[in-house]
Image (tube, rainbow, N blue to C red; front, side):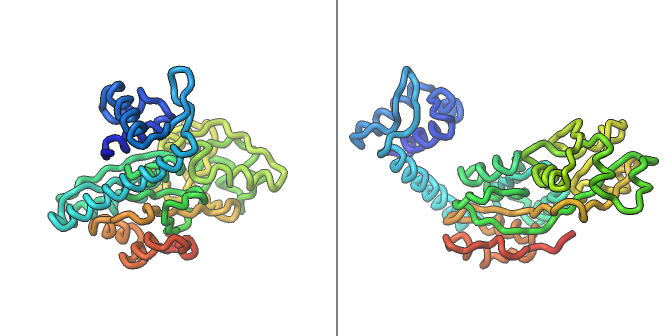
Amino acid sequence: MKLEQLRCVVQIVRSGYSVSRAAEALGTPQPAVSRQLKTLERELGVDLFVRGRKRLRGPTQPGAAIIEVARRVLADTAKMVKIARDFQTEESGSLTVATTHTQARYALPPVIEAFARRHPGVQIMIRQGSPDEIVALVRAGEADVCIGSESPVDAVELALFPCYSMRRIVVAPPGHPLLEVRRLTLEALVRYPIITYDAPFIGRSKLVRSFAERGLKPRIVLSAIDTDVIKAYVERGLGIAIIASLAFDPERDTRLRARDASHLFEANTIHLGVRRNDYLRSYVLDFIEMFAPALKRKRVENAMRSGDETPRRRSARPKP
């Protein structure tokens, strides 16, 4: 049994049971992936996947259990490599941060800048995605840390730490009637076309729910994952926007005006997540503490080892 066989099996699952897509992801010819799978099945004496007409349909009962073990073996192997590298050279390596656009664009630049000055030998990669996608990257070992909102509650493989609450604002062009309203209400907002985040991002469901609870239906005319895109369309007069307060800078967004809407919508909690039972190199732990100063090394490591700890209970960073 070889690690390469296990990698092929796990990648087949990640690729939706497509051997061709798994081969593409691994950078390996498809016949080689099929051969690795068949060799492993022959060694184990069981089929790992249910086969249909020239394709795999899913795992067999023993296959599901074996695939979980394969994941753990690969994770532990990666952990050994990290430990060895940490003792070989502390100040070189890579840091992969999986995050949403808003965090990458507005929250992370000063942290990344400070980290790069402190650890010039570390290569930094930022991978953007939806909250579900960034959690999946950490779960699969393709990212060291994920930072975003609305992290799934069933991410048991991850230790998730609440970092700060992000309130909402309403953004409109200068001279818009909403800017003259003494106190914003949902009833006032619903009169105008609304531009906001795409469904998986920054609490879109919470926003819609706030209107629904008052028997109101907002007219969302445009949605996007990029706050800069949203603001560009507001500047053109297509509607008002409901966005994260973090994403508005009066000095930069001179063609827009903002009103606080934190009394209308539930704040979003930004979480930082790491994989349980993983080994984080010292500079990764340093990055975590730079982003959320209350997340000291010992607290993070204890949470990663403890399967029953719930680190969401307290905030790790004051509200901005």
